Length: 93
Image (cartoon, rainbow, N blue to C red; front, side):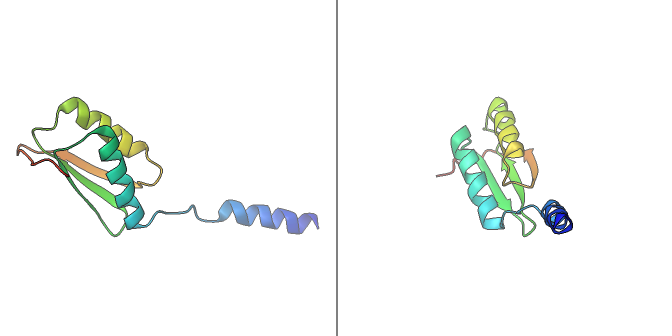
């Protein structure tokens, strides 16, 4: 019986961690952008779940920094690539 219990514990520890689907990552990114008030931004989520975020020049640097930290710490966003461009963006709706 102890062997069975140890086997079950080992299997549970070896099980892969739940990975969010690209749709769940997109929803998470949208939520973070809305909470942080980032308006001049565009993003895309790849099939691997990595978020690619572009901030316009008219997005304040302090907000970009705050938003990037929030995106990086979100558990449903497995990867983030971001940059701030030299181009003004229209605000997202």
